[in-house]
Length: 318
Length: 318
Image (cartoon, rainbow over all chains, first blue to last red; front, top):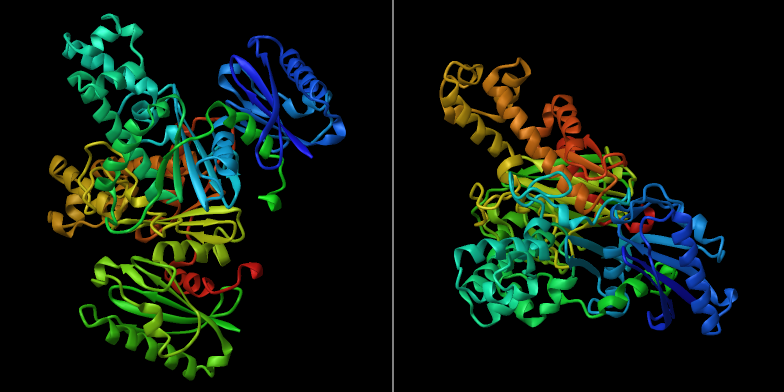
């Protein structure tokens, strides 16, 4: 049996057929076309799914289940409760998609699904417990406990990016102040970079973005830091400190076996990883005791398809 | 079969025999006598345990297991790794106690054990998941997931009191700044109360502690707030806001079915509970969705014995 994994994003819908080990057998993609009625979007999703199956010789009987990772949250009945950048609220995604292929549908948050994929066949494979952090425009979280994704009792947990980190801190899009993602996302790197640009007008940072703060990216900040540009280094060190605090928060609360860093910022690889690993011990209460291993995600963009597909794999096979 | 539960505190060692439903059948107590060699302390523990058994007609064959809640952390081999107020480091508690009664010994953190007791037969009985907060001198945490206590992969988790809550905030005994317990413990209430005393010299707060800040207690602050003393009310409202943030942190990260408030501060009961429940929604991201129920612990001081005893109860009976 194979499992269908669907990665629903604001730009594209990626669909793959995945075997029970997490290996992608074939895949396809269709534009999301945000703004259209949900029936149309889910219709394209269904057609693309059937096309990927047909093009690769799979029939309905070959499919065990469908899993979908969404940039939002869903209830256990397969309804999308909330999906900000799609503009969805209370959309019957499962029921609508089953009109195209009548299989069990499992839906979970995209960060949760990506973390689950890393548990299935990535850097946290087979671990006791893991927390995945997507360091992107915002910060998402994916918790895996006992071989299953954990989204909490009401499905609103693992929102690591919105843990309060600073009283009266940087205002967040969620309405609160000082949320963790205001300090640990790519957006935070850019915000801190812009501040340092005006403080260090002759910095490499300014050169890299042609003195236009609006062109500054997180990668430029890291590139400047790598060659010891002072403005870049200051932002990098500040960011690493915040990220170490975030990891420490996860450790002191949940103490998972592994914390996995994913998302765009994690593409900095060892440059980031080594610095964060070096910074965490200063925060630990129990200095002599082992604590969560920190790793960089290994599956990249495929994590969404793999993790979604594996939502439908029975736990006993895990 | 019955289970022995031991609540190891800095002042006394409380020991009880507990049935498989969490009911205490009989109990005894002996002074801890901190500062003596650990062999002596564990010796008194062992003798007290045998006396409680003998006085109540229980033989070794009646006992299934021994559980111990400690104000520190232990490894899975029964060694106490760290127990600050006992001055213990790497103490072979299990091996030493088995010299008196050779039964399986289970050890866990006292807040974890108290939270587990509430899951067994208290306010969070039979729930999917719960997080227990002991609001005392510091703030301890007890996580229960899937019917078992959760202390993390390395046994250093559930230290909710040390989640970073404010960057550059109030210095903590652990060495970090701005830990959650600096804002949500009884110690925090007293600190904030002292500040308001000097600001409001004619307040009821000052009268209650006879104008001596060193005599101020958390209960006095709450008593003043109850009769609308402005100084007392300001501290109370500030505290409630911090505690609501703490609950929100637990919700947005783990989203348990229930959050249980225990420890000395929780004796304020509905006065505190109603205020915290009213404050939490302002922090929630998903305003329309259900979230963790907030409750006051129901087992009081017996939670330590009950939860410790139940550590040894097979999970399948749960």
